[in-house]
Length: 209
Image (cartoon, rainbow, N blue to C red; front, top):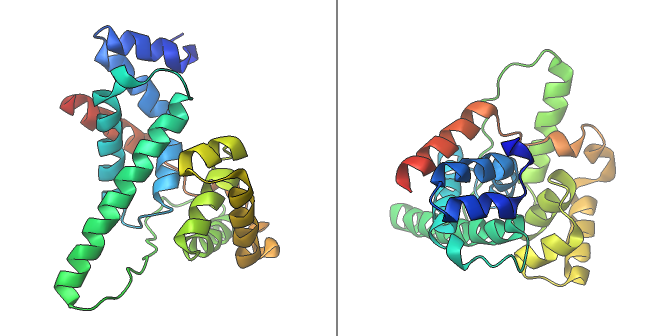
């Protein structure tokens, strides 16, 4: 089955000219890239744009990917660079519009689909709000390690931080969130990227490559 192909096997097919196979990689890592993007950007439309740009940049440089690291780590680093570039544009635009050097405040949107368990939905929303309130450097590490459950080694490589630094930032994030709050809802279920949006990302990228 195609979904059981390894990343390197998919990449080989894409490099042979079967670009549609690239959608398999996008569907495989959309959830991860979305959650990591949330560590930098709050606007949902901006996040989807950043994800598309990261995938396109990855496709354009796929021939230079030499399997010296995992594809997941490689595309994550590309995404982080895209997020940082987008933040510069957002901050610059905000300064022009306001004339003030105020930091961008993250706005929590509440546009999730109704869920059967209203209490669970509210607890999840409270947890997400508290995660979003973390300073960026702690939030990104927390999302990678606790929400996306990336290994400490891969997190270290993606962020170009020492393992010790990753541990310090993660511990600090947990203290700031308070462990009792984090236990209200399983963190791995936070910031879900639904199938409709997954399909949209894949379709938009394939139309541009």
